[in-house]
Length: 419
Image (cartoon, rainbow, N blue to C red; front, top):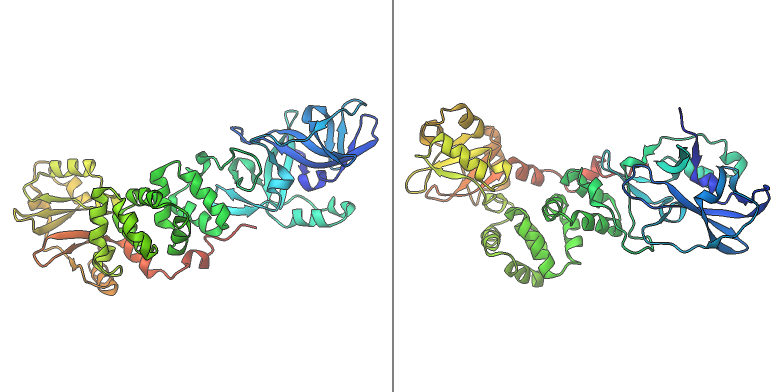
């Protein structure tokens, strides 16, 4: 059975009637307490009676329509409205504000909030981001009622911003944002206001690894913006979780007086990697490379190499290729993970790798790296010194990030607000 939708804009400022149908006040807002339910129930209304804001529990309402709210019984004995922790006022807090549409990872504007009576309980069922809600608010009520429903985004896909809500202990729950990829969350942060972006970052901060992944995806301006409000210790904690090459890039973008204190606050292992990367120009192979890769002796068996892959903490993109070295630690060949899987487990790594590997020097510029990787169809290429010792690995995603124009996500509509 199709639900009968009640537009919030038609409910707000409608009459509050007593049991005999006589007007006693005006509906000002509807109250919900978001929690574990997909469609949160309306717990009550805020009504204006005699110039005072009063709380009307939903059980006191016998009828709710665009014509107004009707009270159960003939007496009016309502308490003063005081917002409780965890409550949202739909009109005051959400109407015309940005919300997160988790499906598609877009911001939408709540031009209309839709209510429906489901199993005798009034619930928030969705949001209409179209201009219909705006028209209903500005047109006279007789004309507003003629505006039909627009496209509804199911509330189950919605996450509201709550930093602006004057109610204690409220913030975006982590559970819905955790469904998104780091790049999608970064898109939301970049499309949002600073206050909204801070709220998203605070929410994902419940998972330090996800927070670091999101920071890696932010453009440099937003990285600086959100890092500037953190202490040196907080900044170091974040950088410690990031990939060393991304941490080095972000550290280099900090104000000069902050770089050394943040660097020295990093754990020793991460600090050493970041210091090494900072010695190279950021747009050379040395500046782009990841110092985390898998280099094994050529005498290692294929089975041993695969076990090393499983145990490695290197990022997946650098593990797509395994590097073999001689007894002097010099690079002698490379093998894709697919080649290893297809090889006999007892075979020596040195017997299955491709000899004469394609490499770049640490001072190679971006165009030289691109030519090299393009000519040999490489997704990753090792960076070596003059003695063929591997210093790091440049992956195709690092190269693409520099090749794409600044602000390309906005140019292609990836961070646009869905209206």
